[in-house]
Image (tube, rainbow, N blue to C red; front, side, top):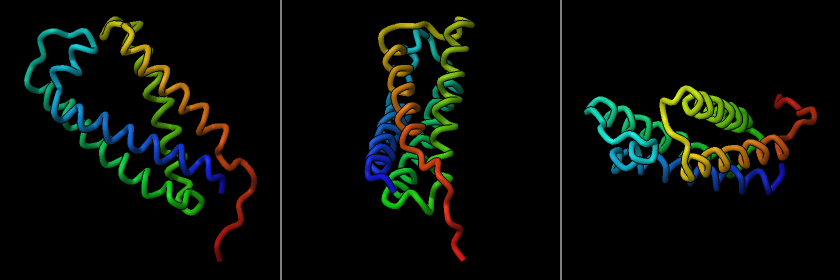
Length: 131
């Protein structure tokens, strides 16, 4: 298994944990990044709950990154998560649910870079099944 894939998984796991923590401790600031000035309580809860999901995914991505081959589904999961997140973010910007600014550009850029990295370093060859 590629050492590069291991590093990419661990780095992206750490990013997910940091984003999750930000969602839990600073939902108002997250809303400002999305260019929303007034945030209702349930939206703050939703951002915090999503933060918890990001932390959980980040932790298990780091664990799977230690030995990706047996946990290849985590690589598939993170590729799917990134591509769906990109699609939803672009849709939200085009629909004017959120505004596009430098921070959103950075979010899109980071996701795009990691999507490419995961796709490039994914073990596309045939795998031997454990017996």
